[in-house]
Length: 265
Length: 153
Ligand code: SF4
Ligand code: SF4
Ligand code: FES
Image (cartoon, each protein chain N blue to C red):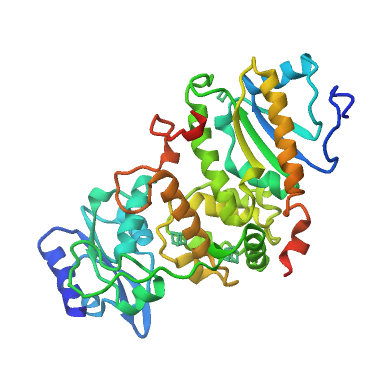
């Protein structure tokens, strides 16, 4: 796998398909994002293909202005989805990025409960089965139990903003979670559940289920379960799922006729 | 205050309801209900907005956070919005929010979406009566009891 990825990086640069390549390199036991412009760069040998994840798309959006032409990015299917969503938010020009897709390992797919572990046209083929969805304990609860479940988790929140800051798709300049009148006074624990519900509602048509927020949360709040539940509902209600394609637009992003007015016609 | 509004207090005193009403239709409908001296419960606090399309779902959540037991969003009928399609957005947002409330553990009946025109004073009064009954049956919002009781299991 490692050779194939290194080969794909070199090939992208030599063929002129990409002006630069972004990937995670393993250096002295640490993982460091590298932007490489020369096929002879020794960092390419150290390209990392293990199970650790990082939001390549966020780095791509940051690096793009420093790149001439196309930026190739070594990433997973999650990264492809992040890029699609970032493009919809006008944060990334898809014409200028090229994904060198790597499949996830079976272990990672199982741990993530991922049903899409292999990106389209991966640089190396792999036999990885879509995993079973993860447990969502809140789903089988009745309404009062569910509130107690979430409040119990939310009450541990220290308002570090780790979830928001690490999320590759939280890009608004003016964040509702910082508004005192919505989320309570800053520097204090947030008002709950409003803080988490606001974020969950905004993620319903944006979250691509990469799980990075949950990895970042020091309070171990099952954020991914929360966002999965609202996202699943959004899909059921509107038939829209974020990330899959760059063309579809969330029904909540335009006024138009496409609204299903249902009983409220 | 109940007297000042000319409304009679019928339902449970404790229930608090917030109603977002669009300026052009539902607020005028509420006004008509008042002018026509229709009786309806007084636990409703009105918030006049220019169009229901300006209401963010955040406001509804925040209303529950601040102790409201039920929230009404009422605006012009589809096709009558004074900003043409503001209420298309309202329909999408709040039909979804109703269902999403359940994901968080809040009964979806606590949020009501309704179209009330300026001529529908009767409909407005009925809406308030009916909704107040629904909320009285559900009881005070569990969020209102404060995070302490709810948070500690
Ligand atoms: S899983 Fe978390 S970090 Fe990833 S897109 Fe969704 S909200 Fe953002
Ligand atoms: S990362 Fe966890 S503790 Fe930090 S603000 Fe988000 S939910 Fe709260
Ligand atoms: S003006 Fe009444 S809903 Fe838009």
